[in-house]
Every structure is written in C-alpha cells, then in structure tokens.
Length: 62
Image (cartoon, rainbow, N blue to C red; front, side, top):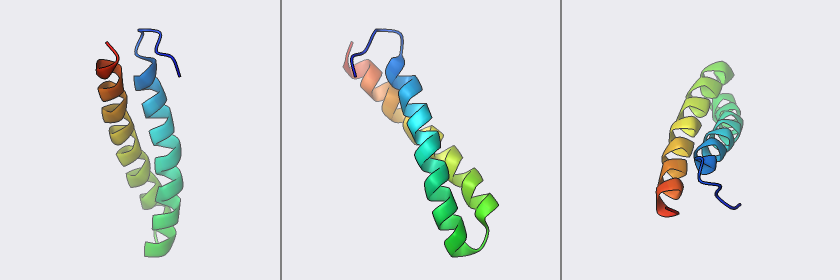
C-alpha cells in the first residue's frame, strides 16, 4: 500500500487490529469460557497494537 501522507497506515493498522483482535478474542474467549470478555479484550488489544504499528509505519515512511 502506498502512503498518501495522510496517516493511511494508522487507519489501516487500527482497522486490521480491530478485525483480527476480535477474531482472536472469540477464539481465546471460547477456550476460557467467556466469549464476550474475549471479544472486548481482543479488540482493545488489537486496536492498541494496530495503532502502534500504524504510527511506526507512518513515521518510517516520512
């Protein structure tokens, strides 16, 4: 993906983090017996990691 200079990596990181985080949260929640809590923790962790990766990629390409 080509960066247009408007922080597109940040948005992409957050979107992918939320999507994959919620999917992994469902899987881990099913293992530990509380799917709802797994979704919440998985999505929040995915957003934070996606934001960090997006900021890193955005700053790296400047």
